[in-house]
Image (cartoon, rainbow, N blue to C red; front, top):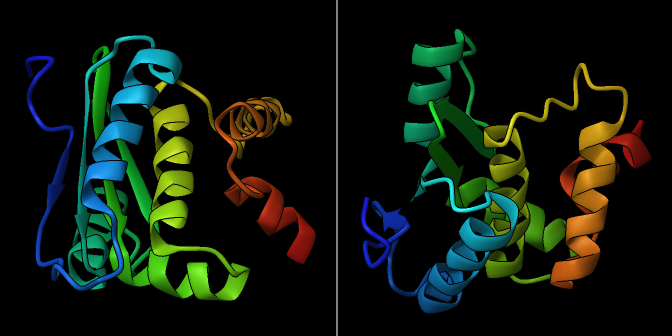
Length: 148
């Protein structure tokens, strides 16, 4: 993937879905440069049906989820459900674009080798630091812990 290639593919995402495509491309480029430290990644933004299929096919879990990360060598791929992002954005009172940015950050941290299920809070701390630097609201790991 060349530096000028798009970092995001929108599949079955209507233009009126409340997603600021150019803002997300700019954010993805910022993540590539600062968080992924020049590691290539690509993000697919699609619907629940495709996320459910990917989750079932690659992780053996038969349900739609908000974000999936697929590490590969020095980079990897992300898949984000616009349906989950829209629902979570409504629930937390911010835009769909902001929610997708949170999901993208979370996914890129997984691509960088973090695993919040096994790393004793290391990913949560990294996500919190990056959210503050990038001006993002409460992240995924913290939201899950607040609900528990």
